[in-house]
Image (cartoon, rainbow, N blue to C red; front, side, top):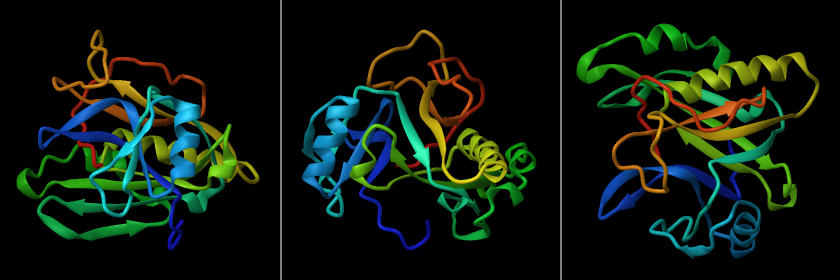
Length: 205
């Protein structure tokens, strides 16, 4: 939702010894102690200091799945950028208008396209905590948002979904996963458990 300041932000990466590392559990940052405590009670983990001055508190949760409520199509947006160029080459509030599948197969080298997709949502079990936001440059996440948008359009109002981290490589467990990637997706069909997945995903914190 453009112009809305979220109560907290979800992340799928963290810095470890100065290096971004893909996480197997959600990391949530916020400026509110009450929000951090609410997230901790719901998803596990505990509030601690974050490196972000805007969101000085973080919770390294114990969950790879968060059951959420998406308030409507206005909560979903995306843009396409070229690597090395900060200005979006295409921006859409309507993510369904973006040719995600065609762009994903394009191999343009140093200036290849990548998505920047955003989702605003509330936690189903704790809506009083406010609106959260997750932003990602994962193609898989952008594609799952397109499917979510179709469902939102068919319905009337909010939709319950699962914000998930799925293992790219089967057989690897643990919070720190330095040898591969955890791929973010949104599931509305109940299939949101850990699974293997092919492809290379870039994740933004």
